[in-house]
Amino acid sequence: MKKISFTLATAGMFILGTTTASAAMLQDGAEESKGFTQVLKEQFIQGGPAFMGIVLLCLILGLAVAIERIIYLNMASTNSAKLKQQVEDALASGGVEAAKEVCRNTKGPVASIFYQGLDRVGEGLESAEKAVVSYGGVQMGQLEKNVSWLSLFIAIAPMLGFMGTVIGMIQAFQKIAAVGNLSASLIAGDIQVALLTTVFGLITAIILQIFYNYIIAKIDSIVNDMEDSSITLIDMLAAHKK
Image (cartoon, rainbow, N blue to C red; front, side, top):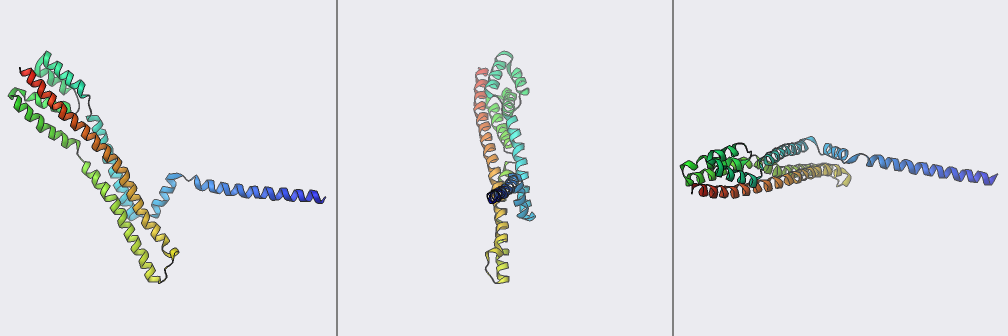
């Protein structure tokens, strides 16, 4: 009988221990199941609406500019080799008007530059070259439109974060001066909130910097293509004049 009681007690202790461990694991799992988005939201709220809201606005506006530029640049990208071959064939078969028609039916800055050069070729090869160079500058301005705003948001987001951190630290030291007791628990919350603004400012700058570098690389690629195509067009016009 004593043996059976001891066995039952041991089994009860094992079940109780297992249940307690399972409950602890479920609690840890519930905390981990919050996910990155939920944790990020909580940290954002803790950072305070003043500076965190401005940093978030910089991120939203910067992403809007970046997405608009990426769409525009992708639409501006054309198959220049195919266009040059079509213009050359049109010049050989139908003359300048046929080549202009090809450019009118093709989207992108390269086709627009070709059209301007072909439109002025009647005034001489030098006039066509000047038109190509001048309109190339116009197209470069269109490609770089609003990119300066993106660089502004990249610069201002971490600065706003640093400003929030400095203000939070000032408030923490003011609290120490008022209480007269240097306690870590007294200012830990204020310091945490202050540092969160810097973290979110840096995250915003990093995200926008990635988009900025992609946009600049895309613009450089299109500009190089424009310059190479412009030289090819002048060569084709010179050969056609002969």
